[in-house]
Amino acid sequence: MDKGDESKELKLGRRSMNRRELKRIDGRIRVIKKAAQELKERHGGIPAVERNAARILASLKMLEINISDLSAFLTSP
Image (tube, rainbow, N blue to C red):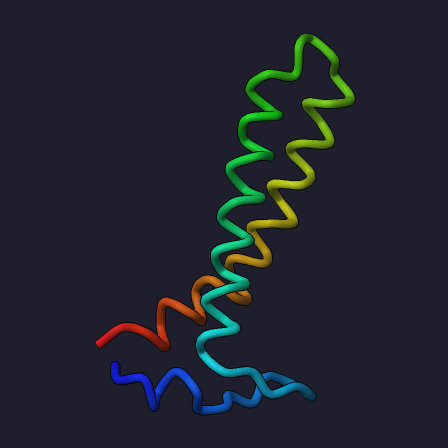
């Protein structure tokens, strides 16, 4: 993909977004997912922390389906 492709606008619902923005959001999702996984692993025996970390990961899964998978599809050759 050349640089011109990254600046092309994608229509996503009511909003337009370029591929660079989509990649940036995808990166943030990955960072948050890693933090939530670490939190779930190190809950320290506090059930509420473990449950809420699991909920965060479930929400992140939906973001991955909506954003990360789209980003991978758009950037694949």
